[in-house]
Length: 256
Image 1: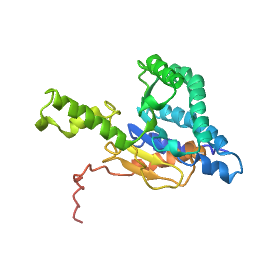
Image 2: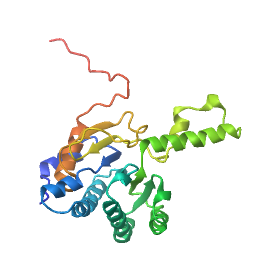
Image 3: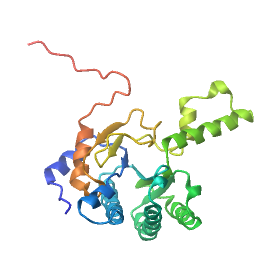
Image 4: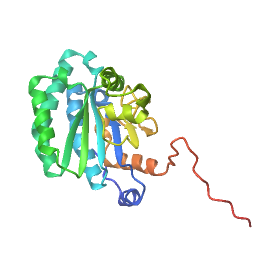
C-alpha cells in the first residue's frame, strides 16, 4: 500500500528549490510483480496507475515539465506477448486519461520514432496532442520507441540536410543549433533525472539533454515509487548546488 507523505516533508519540499523539469525512467514493473508472484503484465498495469499519482503531485507542486520514459527503442527485444500487451496498455491509457489531463490543463507531448507504432495508436497520439496543445499548467512528455542515440542521429540528419541545401553554413553548427533539432525542443533540459528499480545508468535516455542534470537513483520499483518517495527525491534535489561546470562563490569566512 502506498504510504501517505507526512506533512512536515510536504512543507519542507514546498519551501525548497524545486526543479522545473523532471525526467523519469520508470523501471522495475516486472520485478515488482515477480516479487509478489503475479504476472509482469500486472506489474505494468500498476505502473500506469502510478503515473497518475506522480502527474497529480507534480501538478500540485507546480512542476512545469514531466518527461517519462515509457518504452525505449530497445524494448522491442522483449517477448512479443509482453510488447503487444504494453501497446494495448498504452492504447487503453490514452482512451482513459487524455480527457482527464485536458481537464487539468496538462498538455501532452510524445517523443520517439512513432512510425513503428500501429496506425490506431498513432492516430490516438495525434488527437491527444491536438486536444491538449493549448494547455499551460504542465507539459507531460511520453517517450515511446525513444533512444538518445536515435535522437542525436535524427538531429544530425536534419542539420546535414540544411548544409546540403545551403540553408546552413558548417561554421554555424553550434550546441544550440543541435539542441534545437532534438525531439525535445523547445523544452528546457531536465533539471532532475530519477531512475527507479535499482539500476544506476541512464540507458540511452536523453543523452544530450542530461549533460548537467542532477541524477537520482532509487531501489524502489516504479509501482511503489509513491508520493512519499517522490518527495524524498525532490528533497535531495533541493539540497544540491548546481554549478553547470562553473564555480559557486562561497560566502567569505568571518574572523572571530
